Amino acid sequence: MAEIGPASRPVLVLDFGAQYVQLIARRVRERHAFARIVRHDITADRVRELNPLALILSGGPRSVYEPGAPRCDPEIFSLGVPILGICYGLQLAADALGARVQANPARGEYGRTDFRVREDDPIFHDVPRETIVWMSHGDQIHDAGSDFIPIAETPHCPIAAVRHRSRPIYGLQFHPEVSHTPYGSLILGNFLDRICGNPRDWTMGAFIERSVAEVRDRVGPDDRVVCGLSGGVDSAVCAALLAKALGPRVVCVFVDTGLLRQNERAAVVDAFGRHSDAELRVVDAEETFLKALAGVTDPQEKRRRIGHAFIDVFREAARTIDGARFLAQGTLYPDVIESGGEPDGPTATIKIHHNVGGLPAELGFELVEPLRDLFKDEVRRLGLELGLPDSLIWRHPFPGPGLAVRCLGEVTADRLEILRQADAIFLEELQNAGLNRQVAQAFAVLLPVQAVGVQGDARTYESVIAIRAVETEDFMTADWSRLPHELLARVSTRITNAVKGVNRVVYDITSKPPGTIEWE
Ligand code: XMP
Image (cartoon, rainbow, N blue to C red):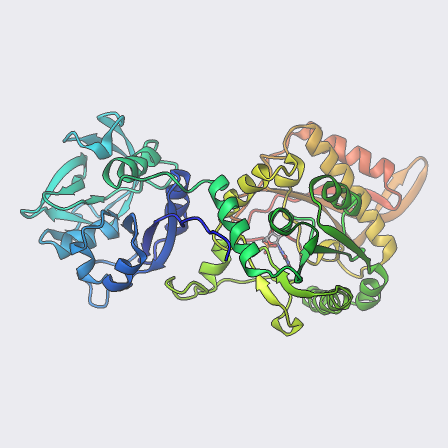
């Protein structure tokens, strides 16, 4: 067996239904501690087994005095493991240990609030005595009881933070994880470093070392790993990590569906050649996909057919790879959590997975998912650490069904070509304007309508291109980008001049909701 270094001791974030639970975990990881999200009723015995550095009790929508409100195993408070309660988590710890929680007489505090530190404490090291925090609570501690010392206050919340007299237990009524609490990250860091003795061993360097050892341990010398490349950041980082561990025993498969953006295939092949010594097989499948899509206009039917065609093409390609026993997937931690796939994690929450291009279990491979512990921002940092270029790391997401869902109406080679050219012009102008990072996703859409125009002295009747640019953190909600008018004007002029068959360009000013990011 290969030597696998010790894993970081986790910080367990108990999920009481907080909107921000993943954000808490991300903030902890930014302080180089390995946060894992676990179910709120994890038993004290299991906690002992996992030997965590700390427990964080998340916020949640309920009141601790309500019947049926989620509670934790009360024994966790006696384990001697440092605990930080946030909002509901604070109220729960307080309620369990003799303090009294009740509704705020002023009907709660929501948003930015003035905050004053009352007691010097390591958790407030380097935090100004007066600052701002972000609050979102209807309940609060009314009476701290004999075991808790109030250490901070806000105008409407006299007990806005507490420390236990004899145990390493802290509670914060405000949300340190959100960016609206300017010293929130420092407060979390102080808790980890000064209260828990954080060894700060969650780093991408350590992660690479451990993952490489684990993959080498699992994949035998005669086995090969098939890795589907999509052109996106997750699959590229996944492939690069595996290639570091296994070199040419990784075989990457890139399916050219004919639904890719301009120069996308060349860019993938080029970046791959430069940064990997794994093998790359490009499958030319444009004809298969166009045939499958002929005459189809319904968006879900397009997705279904593309999904099936993709599996067929991929299966065929994988069949020709000798010794292929494993299939690599770039599954990320949020997918694992949200699908209920973590042994100690919360049960599945409802999330709409588009998941086109996903591969079914029937392909008969064992799965390798080296990114399943990582958040997206960590995948990006990992990619940079592995030497992948910036242009790849900061790529906008591109949907699995590709241009098919941006070519409204029937998908034909001619219509795809119009869309591809318009899209390339828009993306190039955005790049030139230096707005690529600010915008989360940008693209052109070919509408299924014709518009009247005039070019030279002639009347035209041609296609309409819509351009869309959105700003978002999580793609669940989004706002349309306020792009400069000059930029929009340049894009419109260039597209109508250069793309044959287009005489009109419109800019989509719809946020999500009520719109979605894609048009189909
Ligand atoms: P919507 O349009 O639902 O998009 O607001 C949210 C994010 O998901 C992407 N998207 C897809 N990704 N297969 C994918 O892999 C799909 O069928 C699909 N549809 C939308 C979209 O590009 C955006 O990033």
